[in-house]
Image (tube, rainbow over all chains, first blue to last red; front, top):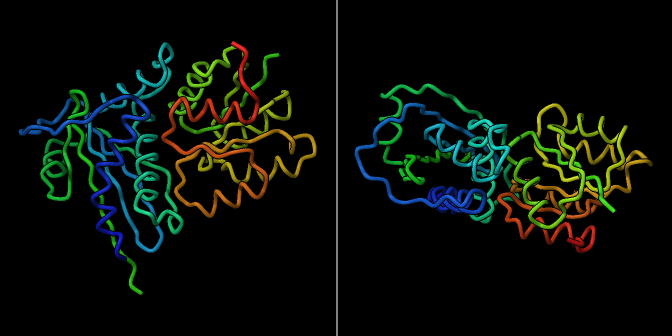
Length: 152
Length: 128
């Protein structure tokens, strides 16, 4: 499938678009070392179609708090950071597939989140050659797309 | 006259954002009801008068597609306009829903202007 490369390159662009549109949060390149946050989480969303893919975001719960404060004004305390992050990934996955021009063939699943990542898991993810690490207004975020084309 | 708006989305984040966006669009006198899935939405629709439903597609318990199908099958609910607000990338699914009679579709992530123009299309301009 010729658009696999396009999908990989678009993951970071889709994350940037969704954060800016939804929460007016802009992304900057992150500087090493990528120190683990106090509250690291891994958000994952799977999709399926001509290829099977997994989009993952490794970040701090604090990013979810930033999103909640941006979208909800005075009632942001009613929004959990984890809900905000799962919804972010939902939007990123949809945007990614639409912008790659192959959305009509894919279905995306509900996102999942796992907290309490170890420092080793954080280091493994952020040092992965497939991961893009950015600074979201003081919060580190690393995004990675894994995709496997189905054999014809 | 104030209208009743029902927001259906399993994400509290999105429900809050739509709520805020509706206020920012000038529809601040409207009553906003919320549900976290299609089944809860149908419960609300069975007891309250609703003028517009803004619904996500992919939700646990009952998804938006089934909710819309049941609304269209109910003569008391079928004329309530439904606007789908979704990140679903599948264009065919959206086109099928449009053919089945939904009022509009707004893609996530959405801007306040996208919600405002959709509400104006469905309800007409707000009198602020």
